[in-house]
Image (cartoon, rainbow, N blue to C red; front, side, top):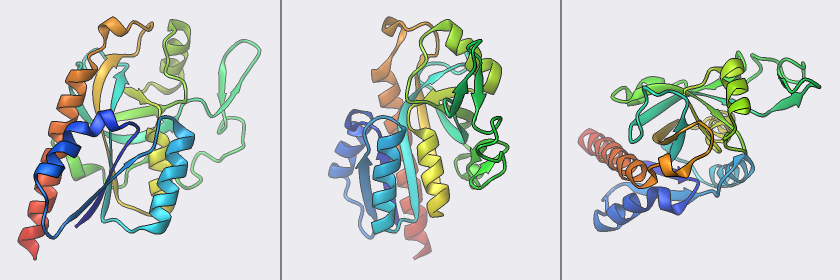
Length: 222
């Protein structure tokens, strides 16, 4: 089995990299890609790698902010849909008008479904809570902008790369999963409330478990 693990930063998957070095997987190829943060860097590096390589599965692993208080810090979730939170315009009242509402993109124009990008294989990680995500090049840290996002899109979590990952995988027709662990709540910015070390630990426990299961299943089928 050939799997690509994608992350915005090395730090987010460092425990997995150490585990992989200590546990070489015979008959399987596990590659990693660190894209850098943001939608543009993710799109470029994903497109380049997927143009020159073929994978059975691509997994994006990262931390995220939660809009929901019932998603505790440290919980790992499975993203079933992504939306570009900032693709559009702002009117003179400060309200956001999406590119779909403006008519530049049709809401059901591939790879979108009602303005969202869906994972067609959403049941692959059924042991994790499923969430809907938004992605933006700017993490929201002001209450007014947070309220606008909730009013317009009602998301569960946000990241800075997920929608670009979804978009590229759908356009390249590659099976994919996005796994995120909550590191903070989306609220007026206060890093004292964040717990990135816990989120990274829990994220990597999940990614290691997924890789172990996938490679074990593949081995049994040989």
